Length: 67
Length: 465
Image 1 (tube, each protein chain N blue to C red):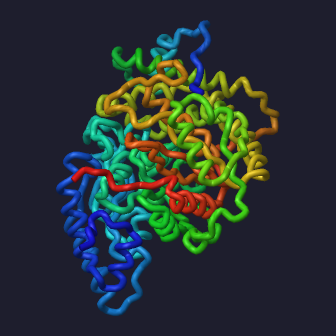
Image 2: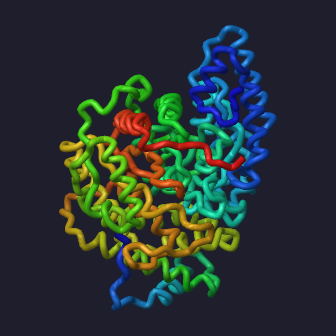
Image 3: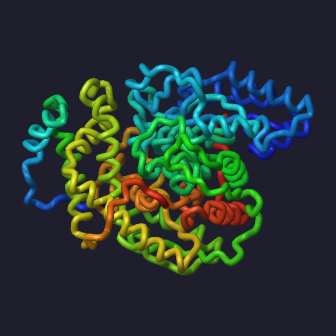
């Protein structure tokens, strides 16, 4: 199953990218905005999918992972 | 007369150990074949002729002195160019990295393989910074699928797959963060082992996503895969996540058969969203094992989404300084994904890491009931070189981001997998993931060996001559 498309009520991701870039110290070539936004759209859909799963408050992050 | 250039690692090691052939003769044969074939496959970014011959001479000299031969005596191998090779800048598929100082020491796994008698012959092409499933590289040129040069190798360990499938070396090393060993193994029709997270040291390799990165071998036989795996096990304080568990060699039990191992096919998420051929390959493997049970891996789609987020965020954090200073020198496709990854709100990434905790517990519950899971390695056969989209379940999707949809949920929790090559017909190969519980690589390799013996899976050298 592919990560589904983002909902139609999409925020203005181009404006978000333009605002976030200087915060990160990144200089965005205008030609990069469209592909960056396309990636942000996929990432947002992934984040929505993960966020929709109820987790107990006690579920601690596993950033340093041990199988 | 044996063609040593395309012989198995086992055959080479036996012949070198017994004095039937010298390691130098084998190395010369490998170098000659690389020179003849690789202009078409583009698997290598560096061929180390002088080093390989010197190393082969050292192996021969050791044998002449009566020293015990290593398990990989005289076996040529090559490594994905994110693994350090002394004297070379560790390229990791990136133009930017060519400016790095040459590595002063070989990566840990290179040292371990050479300690077992193997002979490094070169460094291999890969997708930039390993953020890739295609095997395409704008700087070094694309690695090309030896079974059809007009098709992708898969990536990001594309050169590793191409070199083994083309018979340039019997053994290569790759890395796998989300599928980068298993995808090129499937597309190029060879065996690949992604071990348990933490099993093999990554010291002396260029990282991508520290919490998901694995290194592992690729080969044309299960024996060769297991032999290399055994030679590379062992703790290493230079890799913060390398296990301190004692090595658990796979070769001693490799011929033990299926025994009491409980095998099931992964259903649900893993039984849809791909071409019918991908599932036919799984059915072929399941039939050969007599596996009729189907189980569902819980929340696999969400696991993939979480792996996708963590990968983008951690990868972006790793490369942020390079994105600030040299963004124009990245592969554009990689650059755009990394820039977007840098912009992910932190709570989204934290949520993905918390989900990972839940997922680990849920999948461990599954392994109380089964020992081995079978799943497709890729949703399709190798796409054409340069292909940007494919159609899955009637939906057109970008190739680059979606080739790994069946591998990502498995590596997300660090499970060991042997990718086995299936030839359904005369067309391009497909791969099936033989997945075991954490630290049970030996079980997955045993099952792969059963499949190899049955003829259900095989990895012939591509017909390029």
